[in-house]
Length: 387
Image (cartoon, rainbow, N blue to C red; front, side):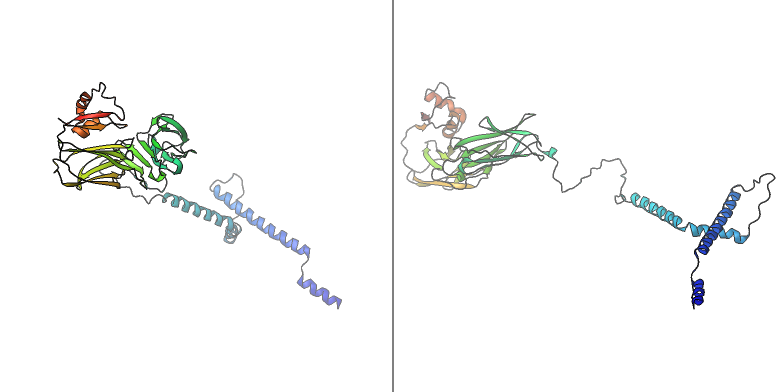
C-alpha cells in the first residue's frame, strides 16, 4: 500500500531539481537565440565587408531567421506599445494646442487701418480712472447736526475736509478711491460751506457743498452741491415749519414795478407770481433773505389781486407756498419809497430789484449820502428814489 502511494506521488509532483534544470534549459535557449539575433544584426551592418582570412559564416536557415523576429516581438511588445502610445499622445497635444486659439477670424483690410478692440468685463473700473480732483458723492445731515460725507479721489491718498475755510479732518481713500467721513460731534445750527483738498499733490475740489443745519428739525436741513452749472440738491428739506417761508414786505412803485422781500431757507430759490402769472425768481441768500422785483404794469385801484411766492428745492420742486391776497389801494403820489437793509444785502441787488438795473446803485448811494457804496449796514434805512 505504501508502494502505491509513492508511485502515485512521483507522477503528479515534479522534483525541485527537475524544475531548476528546465529553467536553466530555457535560459540557455533564450541566450542562444539572442546570440543568433546579434550575429545577424552585426552581419547586416557589416554587409559587404568580410574580414580577410575569416571563415564564411554558416548560413542560417529560414526557420532559424524567423525565430529571432518572433522572439523579439514576444519579448519586447510592452515597451514598444508604451512608446507608440506616448508618441500618439504627444502628437495629439501638439495639434490641440495649435488649434486652441483659432476661434478668432482675422480679416485683412485692403488699406492699413487702426482697429480698436473693446473688452467688456464684469470687473470694477481700475482705480486709476477716478477723477483728477476730489469730488463729493454724499453729504447728509442727521439728528443733532451729525453729518456724513462720502466722496472719491485717487486711491490710497489723503483727502482733507474743509469747513468754512478750516480743515476739520483728513481721511484716506481705499483701493477704489473712496472715502467716508463721519465726525463724532454734530454741527451747530447755521450755514456752512464745505470743500475738499487732496494732498500730495494738492488738489482742491471744483465743487463745494452748502449746508444749512436747521435749528428746528434736522429733517428741515438743506445740503446743496454748488457747481459751475448751478446747484444740485443732495438733501432737501422733508418737513417745513412756520417761518421757513415768510413774505415780509410788498412794494408797488408808481413805475409799475412790484418788489417783494422776505425770508426762506438759504440757497434755495423762490418764485413770484401775480394771479398765477409767473413774474420771476431769485435765490435766497446765505442769511435766509430774498428779494424779487418784476414789472407788472399799472394795477387797477380797488381790484383784488393774488400774489404767490413759492419756495423750490434744487430740483425745482415746490416745497412751500405763501399766497397773499390784497386790494390795490389808491396811489399816494409819493415819489420815493424806503427799504431797510438786511444782513447780506448790497446796493447792487437793491438797485436791481427797485430800479431794474443794478448799475443804478449810485443813485441810491447819492440820495442816502453813502460815501462807500460797498459798505452798508443791517437795519440801515435807505430812501429809494423813483424819479
